[in-house]
Image 1: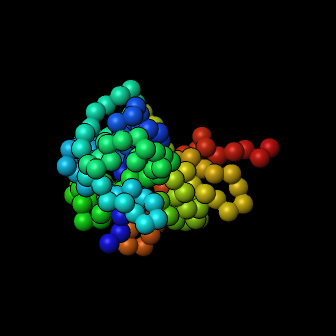
Image 2: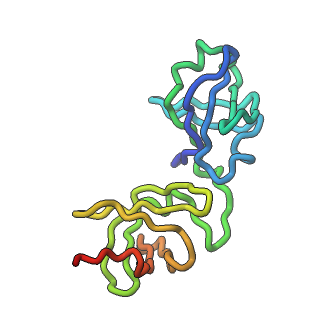
Image 3: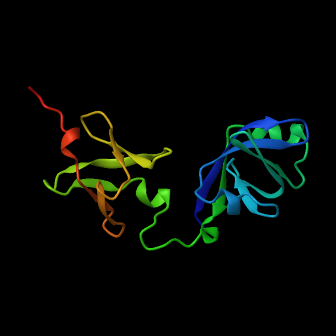
Length: 172
């Protein structure tokens, strides 16, 4: 079964086994709850159950059942947290998981030209921004808004976009 990343353990917090987590999920309120089973992405992965959850500044502080001591948890700094694929939320028809978008080919609606592939997605306050990796050029940043991303075809592995005129670079 595939696993999907929901957060990064960036550090420990205190001596009682808490870790500082930065959420990488759109559903932190349902992913990080007492009793939720997660996997710490080490080799091999470690299955853990959340014992406590609380917010602290921009972090989510978690502790895990049977790991409530800094000496047991410190080795997990810098790792990711994931869930089983069967635990994914149901989404509306026009919503997508990041793992479905990253890797898509991106084509310009007007020219039909392939611009590159989605390398990563940046979560910004106004909207998400796709980082498009181009073959022989700098990365292109495209806002994930209706005027730009017009169609996503997961079956074909393609996203169709409008490249706005103001993004065009005049070579003169």
